[in-house]
Length: 121
Image 1 (spheres, rainbow, N blue to C red):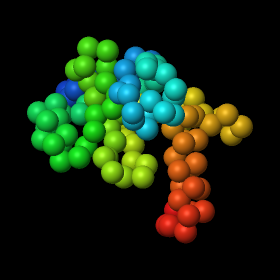
Image 2: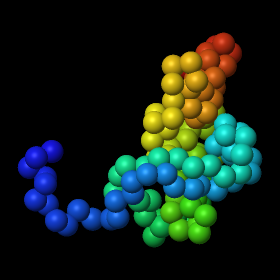
Image 3: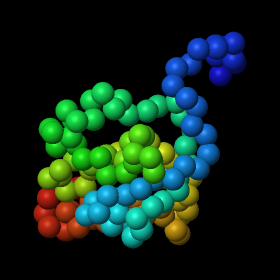
C-alpha cells in the first residue's frame, strides 16, 4: 500500500520465494505430499514464536513441518482433530482447478468423508 512505502522497521525477516520444509512421519502433511521434504512459496514476515513451541506442543499442537535446520516452524497440526493443519506458506500458489494442491485436496477429501458419515462438514 502506498502509505506503507516509507515504513522502515517492519519486524521479522521478509520471506519471499521457495523454502524447503521437512515433514514429520505420520502427519497429515506427510500423507498429503507423500514425500519427506517439500518446497513451498512464501511471501510474508510472519514466524512461529519458538518461545512457545514446547508449551503449545505439550497442549496438543503438533509441529509437523520445519525448515531443514529445525529453526522455523512451517506446519502445525492439532492432535486428535479429524483434519486441522496450519501452514506458513501459500499452497494456493501451486493449486489449479483441475490439479489442486495436496493440502487442499486432502482437506476437501476429509470434509467430504466426514459429511458422508453424517458428521458436520
